[in-house]
Image (cartoon, rainbow, N blue to C red; front, side, top):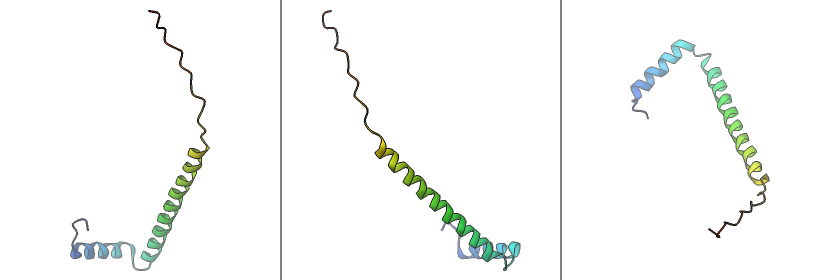
Length: 72
């Protein structure tokens, strides 16, 4: 996992625990989870909006080409 061993991960977790405290970490993770959920919901909304636009487009009339002048 990104070249990190278990000791590096443990050190990172301990630093986060010292910086934020044990009481704030669940709140931080909860808000992070909500943010990821909102992001996924927003991305799905973009996909839904694009699909009807493609179906709604109707092919326009084809342009008629003028016949070439072969009298030259």
